[in-house]
Amino acid sequence: MQNRSVVPIIILFAFLIVLSFLPLIIDPGEYKYLYNIFFVVNIAALLATSWNILGGFAGQISFGHAGFVGIGAYTVSLFHYHLQWSPWLALPLSGVVTLLAGVIIGAIALRLRGPYFALSTLALAEVTKLIVEGWRSFTQGTQGIVVNPTPLLSIPSGGGLYYVISLWLAGFGILCALLIKQSKTSYFFAAVGENEDAALSLGINSKKYKMIALYISSFLAGITGGILAIHTGFIDPSSGFDMVHTVEPIFLTMVGGIGTVLGPVIGAILLVPVGEVFRSHFPTAHLLLYGIVLVIFARFIPKGIMGLFRKKI
Amino acid sequence: MITSIIINGILIGLIYALLAIGLTMIFGVMRIINMFHGEAVMLGMYAAFVLFDRFGISPYLSVFLTTPVFFVLGAIVYKFLIDPIPVREREITSLIITLGISYVFATSAMYIWTADYRTVTLAFSQEVIVFLKTRIGYPALLSSVMSAVLIVVFYLFMSKTYMGRAIRATELDKDTASLMGVNVEWISIATFGIGVVLAAMAGGILSPIFYIYPFVGSNFVIKAFTIVVLGGMGSVTGALVGGIILGVAEALASTFLEYSMKDIMAFILFLGILLFKPSGLLGGKTRL
Image 1 (cartoon, rainbow over the protein chains, first blue to last red):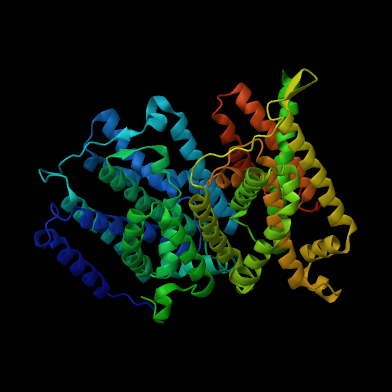
Image 2 (cartoon, chains in turn purple, orange):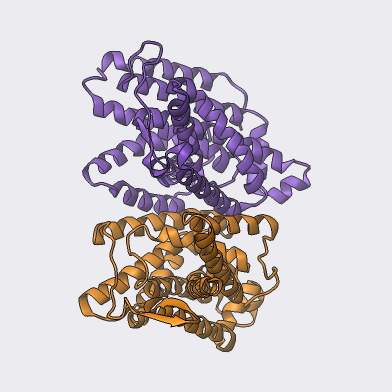
C-alpha cells in the first residue's frame, strides 16, 4: 500500500544533487561519448516515465508519443527559428505547447478505448508529422531546422550542461510520477485502467482521470522533445516524429516494470547504454534488440524487473 | 478525367481490400490487433522479390508457393506468444507483443536485404492498357484482378467450407462454437495463420507495382487499419467496401489537392470513422 511520505522525495533530490556534481569529477570535455550516453539515459527515463503515467498508471496505451516528442522538438526549433529565442527559454514552452496539443488529441482519442485509443494516437501522431512536413513556409518541411548551440546564463553549452539539465528534467518527471503515486488520484487511475465500466459504475469520472494522465504525459513528452532538439542541434520531421520515440518508452517501461515509479527509470539505466553501444557498432541493431526483448518481457515477464521485487515502489 | 480517377482508385482499392482482410479477420475472431500485419506484407513482398530475382518465378504465381511458410509463421506466433496470455490481459499485451515482432521483422529484413529499394520488373511492366480513356498500367490491372479473385475465393471459403463456417462460428460466440464441436484453439491458430498468409499474399501481389524496402510495412498498416474501421472490424465485405473507398479517396485527393495530401486521407478517414461511426460504415451487425 502506498502511504504519503516525504522519504522517497528526499532520496530523489539527494540523488539528483549528488549526480549533478558528476561533471566536476569526470570531465565532460574529455569524455564526450560517456556524457552523450548519460544524456540519452536521462531523456529516455523522462520519456518512459511520461509514457508510464498514461500507459501504466492510467492503463491507456499510447502509440503516439513520437507525436508529442515531435511537437515539443518543433516548439523549441520554431521559436528559435522565427523569433530568435534562446532555445532554453523555449524549453518550458515545449511542454506547454505539447500539453495544449494533448488537450486536442485527448478530445479526439479519449473518446475511444483500449486498442482503439492506441491506434488513434498512432494516427494522430502521423497526421501531425504529415502536417509539419507539408507546411513548408512555417516549418521548413523535410529540410528541417537548425538549433544553434546557445549558452544558458553564461554556462557554455556542452556535454556537462546537457547532462545536468536532462538529469533534473528526468528528476522532475520522476517527481510527478511519485506525487501521483502517493495521491488518491493514483487509485482512480488504477480503477479506470483496470476496468473502466466498473470504475464508471462506482461514480468515478473516468474521462477526467484519463485526461489528467494524458495532459501530464504529453507535457513531459513535449519537454523531452524540446531538450532533444537543443541537444541534437537539428530537427526534421523524420527525426522528431521518429517511431522510436513511441517504441522506446514502451520497451523501457515494460522491461523495468509497468505501473511503477522506478520501473521506467531502471529500464532506461539498464538498457539504454546497451542500446547505444549496439547502435554505434551495428546501426539499427538496437531496434532488433528492442523488439526481441520487448516480446520476451511482454510475454514471459509482464511485470518487468520491478515485478521481481514484489513490493511496488 | 473523373472516370479515370475513379477507375484507378477502385483498382488500387481492390488491392487495399486484400491488404485489410487478414487484419480484420484476426481481429474479428480473436479481438487482437496484429501490429505486425504491415511487416507480414513486407515479408510477402521480399519473398516475391527473392523468388523472382533468383528463380524468375512471377509474383502472381509465387504468392501461392509461399503460403505454407507464412501460415506456419502466423501459427507459431499465435500458439507460443499470444495464446498463453491470460484472456483478461490479452487485448493490451498482444498489442505490445505484436509491436515488438514488427520491429524484429523490419530490422531483420534490413540486415538480410539492406535498406536498398528493390523492384520486381516484369516483362510487361511498362505496358499500358487504355479503357474508357483511362490509362492503366498492365501490372496494376493484373494485381487488382488477382486481388479481386482472391477476395472472392476467400469469401467462398468463409461461407461454404466447414473450416470457414467454424471460423465464423468462433467469431460469433466462442463458447457455443466449442459446444458444437468446433476446436476453438485450432481455429484460432489457423485464423492467425490465414491472416498472416493473406497479408503476405497482398505483399506479393503488390510487389510488381510498389518499391520494396524494409520499413515499407508501416505505409500499408495504417491503410489496412483505416479500411478495417471503415468496413467494421471483422467484416470481409466491409473490408472490400472500405478498400475501394480509401482507394478512390486517395486518388481524388492526389488529383484535386496537393499530392502529399494523399497520405493524409487514410488518417482523416480513420479518425473520422472512429469518432463518428465506430462500428464501421456497414454497421456493427454485418458480418461477412
